[in-house]
Length: 110
Length: 113
Image (cartoon, rainbow over all chains, first blue to last red; front, side):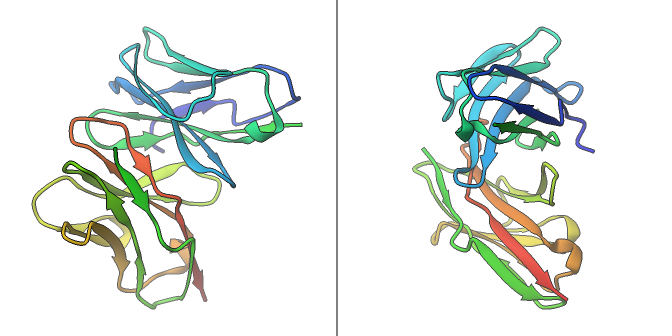
């Protein structure tokens, strides 16, 4: 158990819909990262937050947004969902050089 | 910017045989290097990391990796694999003091009984 929790574990929705994925980092970790893992694209870095502020941006679509709240939990919002958004979404947290990954949310868009 | 290349997408190996998973990186600055493992239906877990110092790094579960600056490589090795090592392995790189990590495409290790 990495100490990072993600909810929900599974999410099934339809194209065009909007969903919110939630991540609680390890106690004391200020950084939160979001990743998308799919069969065709592999593991892609989406975005990083540090203590509530956006720190780095990766291959995140404009339809996706994220935020980190004062209690350090983070949410990833995915809107206007397409079939190709079906993937595993991981959250990770860190202090220092090591990232600790959550178990992921599997999103299926039908 | 950094990039990582994992040359083998799949590596089958018999149980108790040695294995090497290859990783090459590209960077214009000094780097931190990592190997993560992902077991089926789980998140990624850190196996080992190189930050500085000794180029031979030992990790969990009997794995080790060697940082080779001249060849820009960070290959992962284990002298004798077990069935439980069947998983996907990701090499990753970041720049010091910059926490964004770039992952390779992963290598699936299949241990054959």
